Length: 412
Image 1 (cartoon, rainbow, N blue to C red):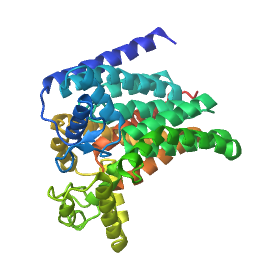
Image 2 (image 1 turned 135 degrees about the horizontal axis):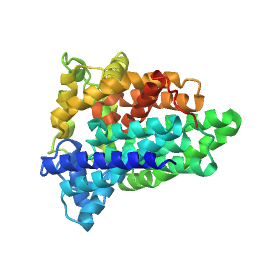
Image 3 (image 1 turned 30 degrees about the vertical axis):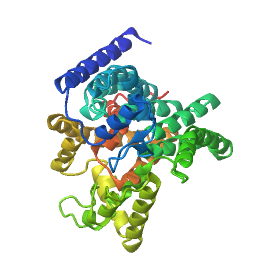
């Protein structure tokens, strides 16, 4: 490997670290917002020895399946060995996972399209707020982004070894326990194996990856069953569709089908005088959402359009993306920068995917992952949920620029 390539990678990492650390220090002691509060709360219980407890939603401390375990465990262990200071955790996150994300983006770009694309994508990962801003907050995307990149590095555009297949399945299980909506990663792993090996030889290998993924998830599912005597495969979050499939979301002219924490139909379920166990609350919320869908079947394509397409891919008015900022404790100015960058990266990324269309081992898994993600986020979506895909789109965008300039990206 040329020395200059490594020097450029080090420069990208250094630049990324400066940006991240300055942001964390400048926003030290910021008020926690959105999911940050829940992660901080669960981590605090872990630090006190109450593993995987919360007092959400009724203010009553109890063993919980409100969130999947990995990110609360990560923060909780840091609280346990250090001080219960979210800002200190954020600083550690950017110091560790910032360089890791930049390096993995560089590796992915380099392996798929050559050194020039890898270097350009690394600098985007260093500077683009939509990649790094979530590392500087208490959000699970901190772990989800590098895990997504690592899995794609193992399976994309190659004939995978058994060891790589097992590793990809294991990491996919960990990723899903970080972020349940990351089920879409299986839409990359399974097709990547099938396309690389063919149906006859690929099917048992894909089953191996899927089986390893399930084995990683199984202990948490078993714990939930033992705790609640009910099947909660991942967390209560899969009941979140209640916040979209209700009359108030459907009839909101300004933000149609946007998720809302509370609505009139379900207010009784959050009455502190009549608390429900996690499993019963999850079941009731899911039942009401599915009853609404049954009575209003057109709600599914409408929610898919507004959440899976316009919100997830930010094909909307800037003010609607900016409305998310306060709820997530982020910066409006940096969100503007991220939006402008995204509206350049998205078309170039799609163009890069088109230019690579002959490489079925690359294009089919990525297209399948993007498509399934669009469907997964029908129940709630926004800029934050796309964060693990941002480095991938940056790589594709850089490959398109290289092709347009007449320097067709290298193939492995």
